[in-house]
Each structure stands twice: as structure tokens, then as C-alpha cells.
Amino acid sequence: MSERLSELRLRLQRIRREAGDPSTREISRKAHGAVSHTTAHHVLRAETVPSWGSLEPVVVALGGDVAEFKKLWIAARDHADAGSENIVQGADPRYKYRDLTAPYVAARLNLVGIYHTKGEHEKCLELLFDWAGSPPPDATMLGELCSLHLYGEYNARVRERYSYEVRKDVALKAQIEDVDTIDSCFHWARFCEGIGRMDRALSWAAQARCINPHSPRAMRIQADIMMTAGRYSEAADLFLKAHELDSGFSVGWHVSLRDALKVTGRLDELAKVCKGNYERAVATKGNSLFHLTDYLSALRVSGNFSEARRVGLTLKEYIVDGKAPGYCRIEYAELMEDLGQIEEAKWALKGRSGTVEDEDVEAAYANLIYRVEGAEAAASLLAEWAERY
Image: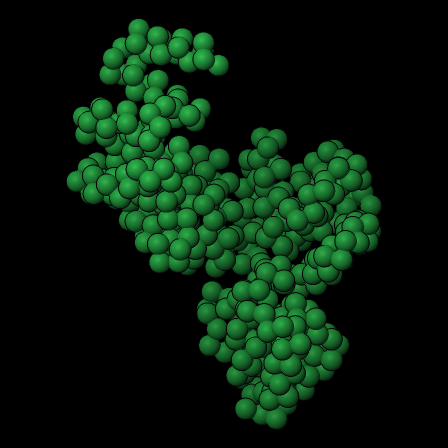
């Protein structure tokens, strides 16, 4: 390692220590996705000279002096081998492309986050409005502003400054290729989806992939819009590809993947994915009950009732302990009905108390009675509930 690169590495270690030794995932979060946690890890190790596009957002996230590090980086770059690639050596090849957010956007959002933490909300709005600009606004920054869930209390002010018609003009007329953050692309894709302009929505989603073709998030964004457009097979392929790269995504994205596999009839793959999610949830102490129920549903849909029966016994333990929410009890009851165990299905919906207490479970119980005892019995049950309420 050259002296200049060693100096860069030591300074990175120092500002990380001064920032409280945040994890690389925390650094990625503070950089608003401008670098992945994998890229941040390799930047901090500095075994070779990182690209400036990777280094700058890490410095900003750690509260370092960008000007100081630009000089250190230039010095290290000048001493690097002339033929070396200007990327992090040994980094995951998925991240040789641009990251999720342009560095200048990440730096701005990080600054807004600092003011928000201090409670200086008016300063946040002042900065965001200044960066988004007056109509016609900057599509990248306005998209980021509209998609910042952290600043939900500002929504009315945003709508007041940027009317529906202004935002519609941006969504339909902005130069899509000039927008360089994935979240902005997703926001405008959703906007176009909401007004029925699926051609434009698909173009915005495609731009998210152009920003980083190997980003699992970008893949899911494009796949989600494809589902709405009826391009189910393509969507299922993209969702699966994203799942292979990153299986630890949110429940919402999992539901989209599940729906794509169901609608395309890829039921064995669905069961495999749901089983893997459940096993990971157990290992990481995540939402294992949701994934257990989802796995049971996939087994039922795919017709694997022998395995479904085994998984159902595990789910029953939660019902017996009174820990299973309504959707778990409904899924178990449907399995029992499939297996012809009607009394067990009724018990699952009633729970330990012997009464039906959840509206969704009530509906499931009434439908069960209708299917097994007929319309008259179901009507009598509903009349009884109506009197009680």
C-alpha cells in the first residue's frame, strides 16, 4: 500500500471513529443509498484507491470534510497504477455500476436529515424547496422530496407549493434520462401508474434499472410496474433475480414476488422461496410467524398437503398459545377444511376463547359455515352477530 493511500485509509478510520464507529449498513443508510453497505466496506478498507463516486458519499455520511478528502483522493489516485480500474478492487461486481443515488443528492438529503433531527423543520423545507426549484421544478429533487416518508408532516406544504398539475407535468414531460436517483424514478413511475399512463410508468421504471442495472431495489421497482402493466412473466423473472441478490427485503416486496409467481403458475418456485424466507426469519429472529403462514399458503396452492400438514402443526402451536393473529388462524382453518377436518377449522377461527373476535376471522367463519352447513345456517349466524353488535 502506497503512503498516499495509507494516509487516505487512516483519515477514513479516524472520521469513522469520530462518528461513533457506525456499521457499513448505517453508513449506507445515512448516505441515502448513494453507496451500498458492500461498497462502503471496501471504501473503508481502502486496499486500493476507490472511485470518487464511492468515496464522497461515505465521507459525507461520516461527517468528513469533502474538500480535504478530495485532495487525499487525488494524491492517492496519482500514485495508483495507470492501468487500474477506477473502482473498488475486489468489490462485489454488482456495484461497478452507478449506485442508487447520485452523490450530490445523497449529500443534500443527509444535510436535511441533520436539520430534521435538530427539529429545524422550516430549515429542511427551505433547503428542499430551494433544491427542487420553482416551477418547472427539478425532477430529481422534487421526486426525492415527494418520496421522503421521514418528512410526512411536510406533505401539505409540498402540495401547496407544487400543485397536482405541476407534478403531473413533471411526470409526463421531464427528461427521464436526466433523473439520477432510483427513489425519484419510483415516485414518478407510481404517479404515472396512478393516472393510467403505463407507457410512461414503464419508462420511469426502466430508468431506475439504467441507474444501477444490478440493484435488487431497481429490479423490484421495474417488476412491480410490470405487474400492473400485465407483463407477469417478465415481472416474475425480475423479482426472482432480485431475490437471489438480496433475500432480506421487506414483507411488501415479498408479497409482490409471491403474487407474480402465483399468477404465472410457478408454484414450486413459490414454495421454495417461501420456505427459504421462513428459515431465514427463524435464524435471524425476524417475522417468522408471517413467513410460516405464507409458506403454508404456498404449500396449499402447490398441492403439497403432506408438507402442509407438518407446517400446519407448527402454526397450530401459536394458535393454542393465543399468539396467532387473525390471518394465521384463517390460513390454518383453510388447511383443515382442505383436509376435511371441519371441526378443527371451526376451532381455529374461534381460538381459545370460543368466540370469533376479529372482523376478518368473522368473515372467514361465516364463509366456512356457508360452505359446510348451507346458506340458512350462515344467515342465522350473521343475524345473531347483528343483534350482538
